[in-house]
Image 1: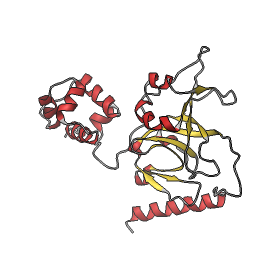
Image 2: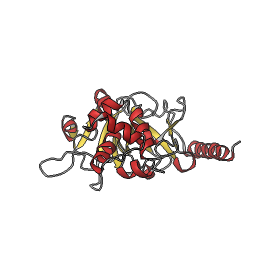
Image 3: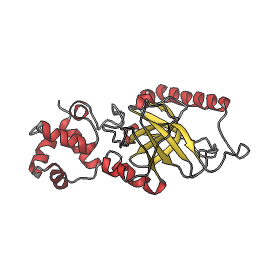
Image 4: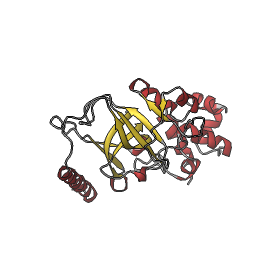
Length: 256
C-alpha cells in the first residue's frame, strides 16, 4: 500500500496548511489535494518535487518512507547548503548574530538572506570544509561565556555527529542551540543535548527537528574563560554521563 497519501496529509497538517492554502502553495486546485490524500490520484513528479521542497524532505522519502512514524529519521539534516564567496572564490564565514538567529531558521538556504549577514574569513581554518559562525547566549556552556562566537564546520548528515563533541544545531522549534551532542538515533531515535554547565539538565531532541548541524571548531570571545567559575565536564564526568545514557537506552530497549 502506498505511503504517499498519508505522508502528504500528515506533513500538510504538521506545517499548518489547510487543503486550500496547500493547493495555493503548490499552484494546483484544492480537489487535487483531497484526491492525493485519499489515494484517488497520484501526484505528478513535478508536484511531488514541489511538495518535497516545501516539506524539507527528499522525494524518495516522500514516496517510500512512512513519515508519520515517530521513529522515522531523515536521511540527512538538510538538502541544500547556501554559501557566498569573495572575489577569489573563497567561501565566506557568515556570522549569525543573536538578533538574526530567529530569521536564520527560515533563511538558512537562501543565498540572498546570507548575503545580508556579516561575513569574515579565518585563514587558520582548514580549506576542506564550509564554516559558519553563531553568536551564543546564556551560560549553559560555560566556560564559553554568553556573547561568544562559535565557528562550526558543516556536517552533511546526522550520522556525522560524534558522541560527546560540541555542535551548533539549527532546529525548527528551538532555533539555534549550542550543546554537547550524543547520537542515539539508532537505539532510541533521539539525539541527547547536554550542557557543559551541569546546573542545566540534558534533554532529548527529535532528529526531525534538525535543519543544520555545525561541528564546533573554534570560538571567539572578548572574555577569557574563568576556570574557577566553570562547570566544564572532566573526562571522567563525560565517561560517566555516556555510561548513564547507555544504561537508560538499554532499559528502554528491554522494557524495564
